[in-house]
Length: 151
Image (tube, rainbow, N blue to C red; front, side, top):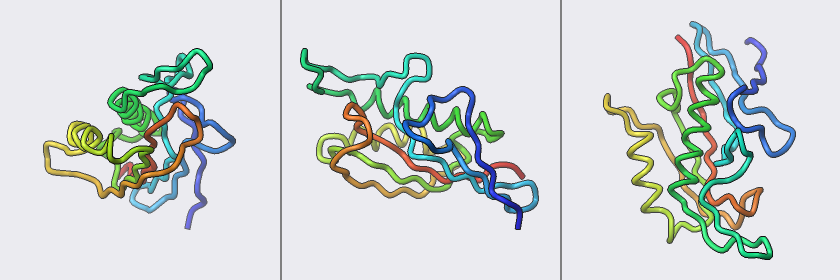
């Protein structure tokens, strides 16, 4: 078996800590299983999270899940394309972390259909869970993906 390879995407925001955007595991026949880090909605150029309203004291007052989820899908697409894949179409499994399922599940499902259900009928598997918090206080959605690229 070949050695896994760490990959950093040039066009995606840097991870919030010391880890890789992705790790590739060769499968043979020019295919690779790719494990992506948990991907949040930060913007590469500004390093800011979209759709967040802060109080004067810096506390989160409100957030726009649609704006955040769209950026998450965009960031995953960027990472996969930067490392030689086709983008979201390569994803085979997704773990979704939402901070507020009662509030955000319906909106997220609508966006899921837009980004992850493809014209050819392909749709990856998915698990969605509610979490108490994510690494940055202004992030309310994160996705952890597995993809297969190449071949």
